[in-house]
Length: 113
Image 1 (cartoon, rainbow, N blue to C red):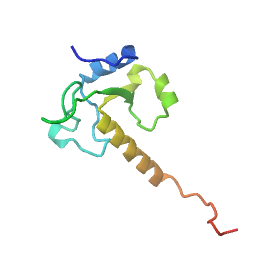
Image 2: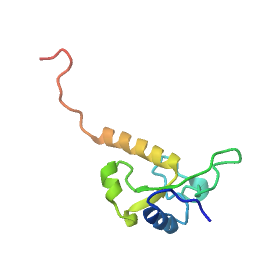
Image 3: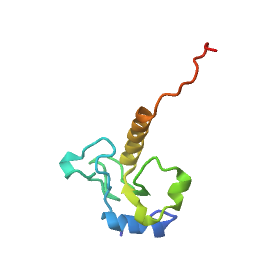
Image 4: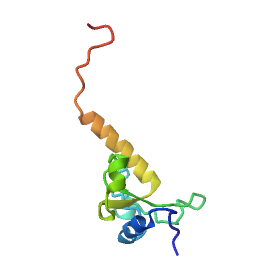
């Protein structure tokens, strides 16, 4: 039997079952996961490597920039299984892309009046 979180099991379990208890990152983290057919190979309760740490998947929105208040209100059908490493990297990549796409503000410089 797979380990489960202490809270929100009713939301977490359907997400994991739909994902087959495997991370659903398809390269949003910046890693194409080419050796695993384009999807992260990490599985819940598995290990990252022979001497690595145990993987605990989480249910989180597909868009890693979703604010926490909105994410908490999403139904399990709108969540995906993420390993912590892919979720962190996907959020970092999305923030960089969002910052690059946002126009620079026309704020005056420090000594401009």
